Length: 104
Image (cartoon, rainbow, N blue to C red):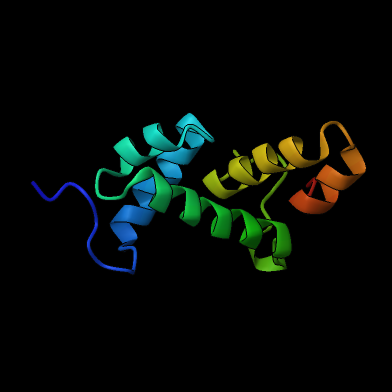
C-alpha cells in the first residue's frame, strides 16, 4: 500500500508532519519518517539536511521577532536544538543563530 511518497515535492501537510516529527524525535530518521507517514527515512534525512542548512543560513528577520515573553515558535525550538548540537554551550554563537527578541 502506498505508504511512501511518489512525488519529488513535499506537500505542505508532509512538511508540517516533518517539523512535528523532527521536534519530537530529532535525528531518529525512522521515527520522523513514521510521523510523516509518506516518506522514507532517506527522504526525511535529505529533507532535514536541507532544512538545517536553511536554518543555519537564515537569520530571523525583524518581522519574525517576538516579544521576549512569548513562547518560542516551532522553528525557534528547532533552530535552538540545531544550535546546541552545532555549537554546544557557546552562547554567543547560539545567540547569533537565534536572533533577538524585544524585552518590552
